[in-house]
Amino acid sequence: MYYEEMIRGRWERIPIDGEMLCGKARHVIYFPSRTQWETLPEWTRGRQSEIVARIKQAFAPPGYEYQEPQQADEDNLDKTKDRSPAHAKNEG
Image (cartoon, rainbow, N blue to C red):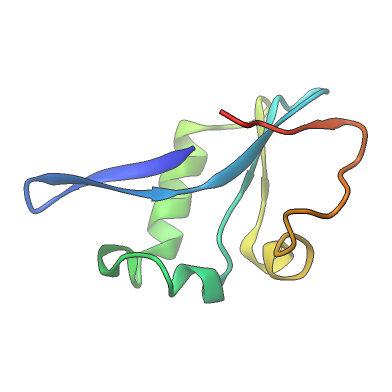
């Protein structure tokens, strides 16, 4: 998935990791950590809270759940680790 915004008359986008789930929430969104956020384009700098809030507004519970940045630092940096059987990888 991605977040996009009109910046100086041009659509710009950043990737946002996520997965499809089996259960009450159909999707989980993994927000970038502060360290990962620093590698994103300059137009996103200093706007992490604003952009995350917009994504949460567009993709709200109960259909979506989130893994917050502090959890992403600890739990989600290695995307190849085994997932629980309740998770289905979203390749699209």
